[in-house]
Length: 72
Image (cartoon, rainbow, N blue to C red; front, side):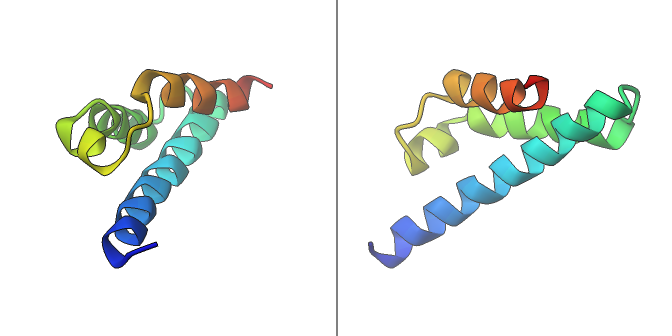
């Protein structure tokens, strides 16, 4: 794995961690503005051209999977 690939993976993993944290917090505190903003920002990133440059993952599938983790 080259340096750029590791960097791309680290960026995506950070976004995934931020999204998980926000969704989990919103499950307990549905009016938490910071978590709502974080969730929206990360979803915007997942759907962006920058994300598709970094990975071939389907953003909608990723969002659905991460959201369902909290429901389980």
